[in-house]
Each structure stands twice: as structure tokens, then as C-alpha cells.
Image (cartoon, rainbow, N blue to C red; front, side):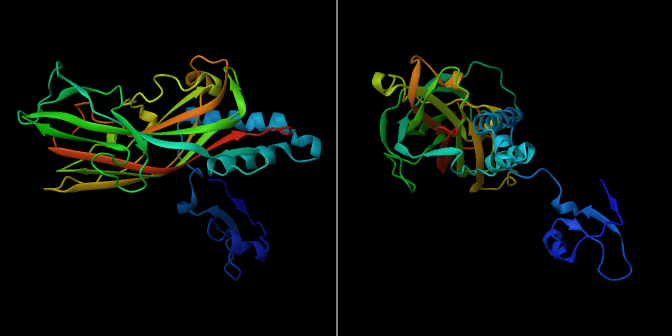
Length: 325
């Protein structure tokens, strides 16, 4: 830790720094040393995967190139640091960003096709009373407005559920949230204009005895298309995949005799990858964003008899704005 010895700190600043720094005493014996309080150490802001941090830096670079604060006599390093801090805090102020409201908020519900499990079983994880399966989701059975509360059995809130039937574990259903946004600035395949989603919400899991960290992932799947071409035919297909970087850091409660529950609070930043989100159109003015918690796939059920996972979050999409729009 860096130290500054015999540094005189004005009394007016000591109260502001008291929560972060140890400062010299105002009366003898003087310590003459300033140090960071251990509880205040660490990187501020959200924990992010390296790829996301790289995209954040790219976003700041784009804003800098398009606003050129040096021409206005502003310190470039300070300006970039302020823009980066805003993004990490999920703050997207004008005039640097468009905030895009969702024009549609729907939930796609479907049930899986189920095949026998053909892999090798590890007895440490499976038993004869709860044999795994292979569950695949593709086409939704129905689409309905996303419920704000728990929903109904016919139209549940986004999430999934699974159970054991005749000694075989299987997923019962999954429901993905799908939102549509009209982009203020149309996107092209090699676009560098930042497009970011900020999500804040929670994931709630219920099980018989124990849980898995794989259940606590908030997955986002962007898709760009052109309004003139209409929505792609596979736009509502169910996405049941999982990427480790989508997982929410959490310490799970211990195993219980019954009624195991856990809620993880999520506050995440997702930067859209244009090349991955493009499909056919050369110029896109619509964004479809799917938000899911990955179902068990017939495997990840921690030897429970019943599991249900639900999630609900507020979602804001932001597109960078240049000096000229």
C-alpha cells in the first residue's frame, strides 16, 4: 500500500475522506500518515468479465473520438475516467447516450423434447431414484405479455421448472423474456457505436434439499433485424444455453432437510456484440433481447425431486450518441 508521510490535509477535507482514508490526528500524537481503510479497498463498481471490461473501454474510446473533449479545453484523461465510471455504475446520461424504451415485453413459453441420457453416470451426483435425461427446448408453445408478479400456471413469469417422473429427472417447462427496442441510430454489421443493456433484478430458486450455482445465471441473447424485413421466423425460438460469464456471484445456503430457497440479486452490464447479433439484414433498426435463466437440461438438478427458478428484472438499453447525434 502506498503511503504519504507528513502530508498536511486541510480540515475541510478530512470529513470527506474519513470513510476511505486514515488521516493524521488533529491533536497529538500526530501520525503523519495517510492510508486506505481496509474495508474501502478494492475495485469500485460492478464485477465484470474481462471481455465486458474491454467493451467498456471500447465504448469510452468511441465517445471520446466522437466528442473530442480536448477541443473544449477539458482534461482528456479525466473525461475518459468520468465516462467509464458512469458506465460501470449503470449511469448513461445525456448528451452521451440515448435511453431506448422497450416497445414490447413478452414471454415465450415452451416444453422440452426428452431423450434418454446416454452418458456415463457418476454415482457421487446421481442415484437410481433420480436418473438424468436429455431435455431440448426449441419452439415456444405460446407467447404472452410478461407478468409483473408470479403469473399463472398457464402463463408463468420467466424461469423454468423440473421434476422427477417415474424415477427420471426432466425439465417441465421454460419461459424466456423477450423485449423489443427501436434503435434511434440504425446499426450496420461492422458498427462500433456502443449498444449496452443494463439489468437490475433477482433470481429466485426453490428446491427440496439443495441448490446449484448454475441456476443463478442471467443470460442475455441479442438479435438485430430490420423493421422493413419483419421479425425473423426464428425470433421467438427458446434459448436454453448457458455461458459461464453470465453467472451471478453467489454463496449458496447449505443443504436443508426440505424447502431449500435462495434469492440472488443481480446488477449486470451487457454490451451487445454487433457481429454476433446480426443475421441477414445489412442495416438493422430493431433489437430483440432475450433474457433467460438456463434450465437444467435434464442434468443439473442436484438430486432434488422438484426445482423451480424464476427471475424478474428491470432492463434499460442505451445506444451511444455522438456530438451530431
